[in-house]
Image (cartoon, rainbow, N blue to C red):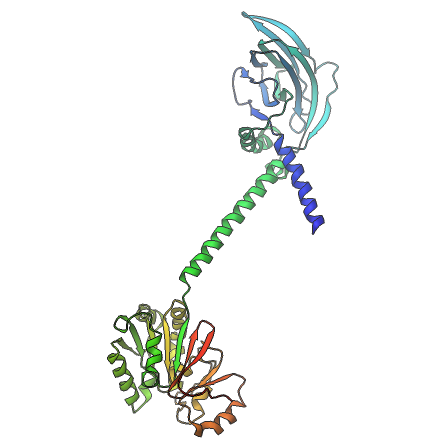
Amino acid sequence: MNKIISIFTIFFSLIFAQISSVHLMEIVYNKAGDIEAKNPEVLQTYYDQLGGVPRNYLINSKTDFDLYINLLVPASSNYNGRYSAKIFSVKDGTEEEVAFIDGQTKFEWQEFYDPSIRDYYFKGPETEKKLPAGNYKITVFSYENRNKYVLTIGKNQEFSWLNLVRAYRILPVLKTEFFKTSVLQFFLTPFGLVLIGAVLILLLIFALFIFIGFFIEKIKNRKTRVMLLTSSGMQGSKQEILNILPKPAYDVRVAHIITASKSEADKTYLEKDRELMREAHFNIKDIDIEGKNKTQLMAELKDMDIIYVQGGNTFYLLKQIRMTGFDKVVKKLIKKGVIYIGVSAGSIVAGKTIITAGWKNTDKNTVKIKNLKGLRLVPFNIFVHYKPEYDEIIRKEQKKSWHKLKILTDTQAILVLNREITLLGTGEEVVY
């Protein structure tokens, strides 16, 4: 790992060393007339194409300065190009030649590779002179005064953010128009690699902000998962139900799911439960889920504080839960903070399976449902209305099951707060 880090450190150090040496780069082949060259001692490069006449570069210096110039040609687009330059002192409209670099007669141009832009040149003549303050003109020419050349003025490297931005703007253009090479090569230059790295970092930061925002939103929207699984509802666990209310009972909206009771002849338990809820001042709405779909159920239940799933025939209830999509709706609502309260069958269906519903032979599978998987809101099966007389059947049937079992008397309830599970009510926990 340390070796990899060292390699990347060296690699990016070399790249940034190239970037830090960036200088003024100017495309002038699309400009007419003379070009003004400021700060003649500072390194600057001009990319030009003669159009039948020489090109003049004008210098106005108020102090003495060292003038360095060098001529080059792009190897990929002007292999045989050869150029010369003359330097004139201009005073009172009179020009006096102070230097001449001849790249057209006997001078041998040498191939030169510039790693910063990944292109080849032929390097021509150069000169360096100490000149007094004043006005000067550099004239670049050839026999035909045609085609592309590069003029470099000055030697001192001064980093500038403006020059760096300019380099990113003109390098792709130079690649395609001046050097006639693939613009894709730009992305392999130090400038291109830094750009790619910067884009990747920005994308990473952007992705990180999205992730953080998503995470914060999840935390903000995350509610405590609250469920109370009872054996006999308000009749045996009234106080436990009142203790988990999120606000005063008169402000609590209860979706009273009565579907399981529809197949029962005796609905006394249902009426008693409803009466006790009204006495507690709950705002109750009886809801039958049969014949409805997920959209309809969500519309009915989304503004409720409690989903109170009443007892009755567990097999019939589970079938309707699956057919309507109630299972998916209720899981979404529980995640949003809606409290689930189960009564008898409503508690059994919350478990891993509903096999316990048939153990006492009082709950008949009249709907012939074969898949007995429950809502799996809790990681165990639930047995309700326990009495000691059921001990033998519980021992016998539990041996056949792979799932854990929780047993409730009519005065007990299981409170689920997120992953914390607590037995409430009177009497000792029954364990097998």
